[in-house]
Image 1 (cartoon, rainbow, N blue to C red):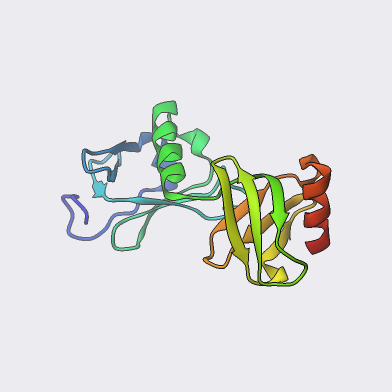
Image 2 (cartoon, rainbow, N blue to C red):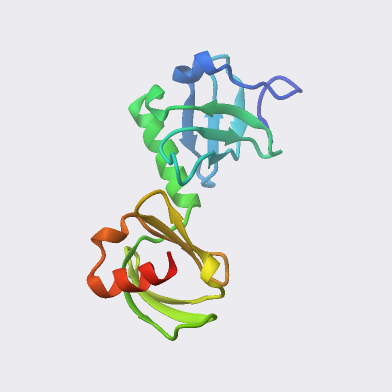
Length: 170
């Protein structure tokens, strides 16, 4: 739903990223306005490389699913605009960070995991050992039976018990 004066969507040129204005309205919708006065309502920020480059390459998508602009480096935005963008990304994403694995119900799947995350204690069902994936050298992604992703940024920083469990899978 564009509030632009043009009837056709207008993409923002990469050279004018610094002129973007991002803000959230009273209905908690992200609004993007470019330096030409074009405005887009209910915009979704999407990380293009959420695991390998989470702080770069962010696409702003309008309500019809069309890309308005791709921001290769949010540092190009002013600090207040960057803060709005980061806040919106965090509001839309849910990837708890695993701090400790308390227990796993067994050596075969499906099994129940009890973990401590940055958002508190939780438990989930792991359907298959392939749902524990190595990301880079030390990071691990665990996907539960509902598709919720849990991230272990550095398995080497886990306690010995948690490390043994993760090393069984990766």
